[in-house]
Image (cartoon, rainbow, N blue to C red; front, side, top):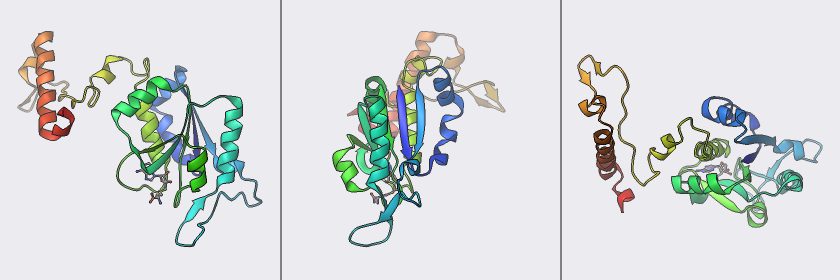
Length: 225
Ligand code: SAH
């Protein structure tokens, strides 16, 4: 998968992709991530990328031209299945959307807004999908894009060392994950449930499933419907 992220503050996107699982996914050539500074596509003398909102009011708006130019340049080189805009009023991101994107996308553009957002005409004419990471407002789309990209990439086969580890995570089957423990099995009297050290794999699997249902019933009964 190839992911091109358009941003007004590209430095915000450097660290999320340069460590751990996402770094390894790139090293293994499973995914390519390119971050584009929309300022590089500004044709104005001052390299400006924003302007006052028509009609007045507080806050700047990202202009059409640099974003359109960047997308046109990228689209000349390859076809993109989706051009996604991160936006608080987009469809709410969930595991099922992440699964869908991880299997369907080969090339995708992700646009991060800033200030008051981007000129509506980009949304009307260029963007194919709008995604929100939750009902709250961030200063910019970079953190939201990092959340989306992380959640999607870890689902691509080969990214996690043990593929099944994504399958047993919360939400994959509409259940929350069971609790996990590691050594020591007894920490100053706090003991690990005995079944987990029994070596009885069938019984452990059954215990985990029961705990998943228990957790989900307690915390997220809506998922069981
Ligand atoms: N004026 C807009 C918010 C702009 S916040 C409004 O009220 O809807 C600036 C940018 O941050 C947005 O353009 C978007 O790209 C990003 N952003 C903020 N909150 C977000 C969220 N919950 N999910 C995804 N992107 C978000």
